[in-house]
Length: 348
Image 1 (cartoon, rainbow, N blue to C red):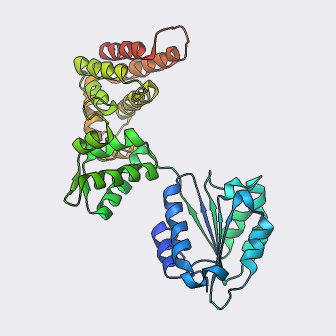
Image 2 (cartoon, helix red, strand yellow):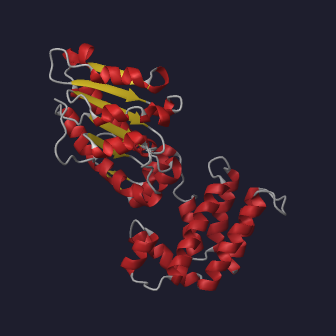
Image 3 (cartoon, one colour):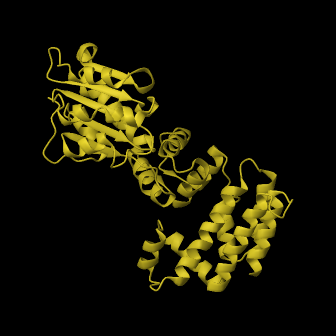
């Protein structure tokens, strides 16, 4: 039976464990813009919830673009054939025409579900809000709601380390930073790159290093945004300009909008740290949402190199450069503007 315990956990690990054991809530709603864990849960239901020999009669997979709510409800209301459970998965629910309004039509079913069926709704989009009739009914009834939101950059390191640990390898902090710059904060993309690195490293590989990332992904460990910010934190003009010159020779791999965003983020943290009343390590780590002591050390170097007034001027210079890059009072190309910005940041 697809029964829900009195206090179900909504962690992805527990939902997957339940699916593999043939146990699930009558309704499971998976929603959010970070698809990795949603895909893992969906795959677990599809591969394990119904025994392979029973799937022809007791497993129904529907797609939002090709179905309607009436078909979903009809499939969920059917009872298992010579089995104790049935599975209905609505994939890509966000692809339905007027998806939110369509999903609200499930309100009645969710209030009185068929407990022999596990209905899994997969909605890969901005999570449905508290005003959604579906979510209201699910929150009060026999349902599990799992929300998977995109992670902030400072939140990525932990799941990356966990994923590497499951692969049986370690990973250097600098390697994580390089991967995030290269692949962004999408876990699917990050884990895909880690898979490539573990294959390239062979069975004897024990740790992912910056050298491995540079060799196999093509991301330079010397000429990147992290090294540029590091140079700024030391007010090392020569190193900063050398990095910018490298960026100018590889513009497609080094978009200035990303570079300026990281510089702005650094000086914003320096400003916040300067004006935060409590400057203890724990207080700054918390208010700045820093991942590790290495990041805190960089902020503290910035505080030493730029007093509060200079940090504020740096923010102003960055905003002015951003305006110029959009054609306001300037016809310079983006890398000349970046060189000008670096010079101004050194003399604020």
